[in-house]
Image (tube, rainbow, N blue to C red):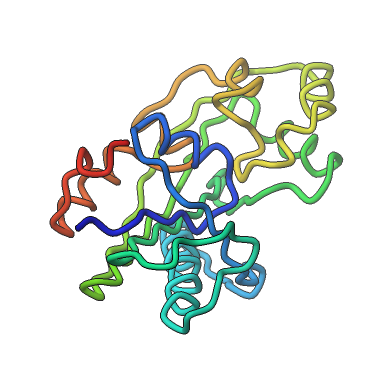
Length: 212
């Protein structure tokens, strides 16, 4: 029997991506303090955070606890497959997460416009049935348009960039300000579907097994 797929993230975009791919994940956000993790390498940072998120939920399940902010979980399941993700934008030699406020988002976009950034997303899978853990990173190059100050202020006023690690939502209004991508486009939205398929295969599963 297949394990239930559990998403250790509150990101609506990640849940929608999984649903689009036929995976109806149970959402159980982790409660780790991401601010305590300091790493200068973006790939190491997102892998560490993704794994910590998945481990946080795995430990709670092992202890018979219901994860924080989770919906009611089935009383009996064969096992759990827990997925954790984390994303950051690497731009001009610096790591950028979600902007703290609108002012920071405006300044970030003034730095992003006309430049090329790299969106790193860490992927972690924990199969509780086998105790196997897989961690990987996907990177996508993002070419930002030369947008005006007025366009930046209008975009930030929508509130959309305040919810995103890269300060833009490719699947939303932010997609208007991205000229092109090099690499996996779903990675920019929250997780790489091709990488997820490869990781599931390494754990012995076909992604089609999880189709609803």
